[in-house]
Image 1 (cartoon, helix red, strand yellow):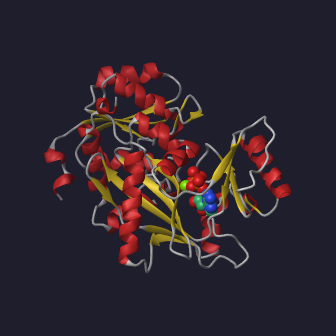
Image 2: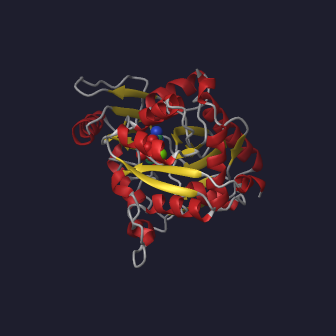
Amino acid sequence: MSAGRSNGRRLRILALMHETLVPPADVTGIDLATADWKTEHDVVSTLRGLGHEVRALGVGGNLGEIRRAVHEFQPHIAFNLLEEFDAVVGWDTNVVAWLELSRIAYTGCNSRGLLLGRDKALTKKLLTYHRIPVADFVVAPRGRRFRRPKRLRFPLFVKSATLDASAGISQASVVEDDDKLAERVRFVHDNLGTDALVESFIEGRELYVGVLGNDRLQVLPVWELHFENLPEERRRIATERLKWSAAYRERHGIETGPARDLPPELVTRIGEVCRRVYRNLLLSGCARIDLRLTPQGEVYVIEANPNPQIARDEDFAQSALSAGIAYPDLLQRIVNLGLRWEPTRLT
Ligand SMILES: Nc1ncnc2c1ncn2[C@@H]1O[C@H](COP(=O)(O)OP(=O)(O)O)[C@@H](O)[C@H]1O
Ligand SMILES: [Mg+2]
């Protein structure tokens, strides 16, 4: 594949990752499938396999260390695997902003897209303006009394306004009356320590769509979380348990894979929606859009995930693979997109 090899150019790549997730130099005898640093290892080893010179840098809360590494190593590009900085989830956005100020090329999404795409409430406000269907919602801020607006009818879905990875999401996130709603809002405030989003519950199938690109966008095949085998009475949602427990998924025959039996015109419509989400949130590099498809065939955007999880066996890479983009080619494309991205064009 032509995009696959960057014309054979050997690059110096500074891989930025959380300081506790730097893969050990020698991985013999370690079960890679369950290692916390699996993604980091997949990326670093694959980039090396492509012939690049890769330095893995653990980032805690010291920007000076990135600066020093850049000075010493003179990377062509930083491969961004950060999700936080100084233990603040979301501050990776600010690191990207710093890379932009420092005129260092980086992979993944630009700082403005990260800012918009990571904020679920702001995302939904923007998408509403562009008439892209999202669940109706209200924010329940911490420290303030919450009252349900009349227009929001049960069942409702309550989640953290800022956290991701299904944090705090369980069957109890779906509420049917005001008492349970108040209880769940309190749970998000007290246990997760964030504002809460109260949304209309969208019944239906759960779809994930990868998008790659800066200007010309490639939409990857529609992926689906198959939870058809979940017991009748359970809500079909991606709970924390479902996301993190392989045993639970196995017990209930839950897996992700290509979406089955979608009419071609629906696939086209979903692709169009995802492109518009990507552009209107000013995303770049790559992202995964989470959607729900109702039994009536309506498509709702749940959220955008700039800089999605890109381990080899995760949805994004698996979906790329099914489109004929092997993992090394995928990473090389992400690098090429980063090299070509001009942050100043958003200013
Ligand atoms: N409004 C909603 N209606 C139905 N299910 C929802 C809704 N919002 C979230 N969910 C369920 O909760 C999961 C996690 O929500 P999401 O906003 O994607 O958060 P995260 O950032 O944790 O992935 C979704 O994948 C979906 O299954
Ligand atoms: Mg999600």
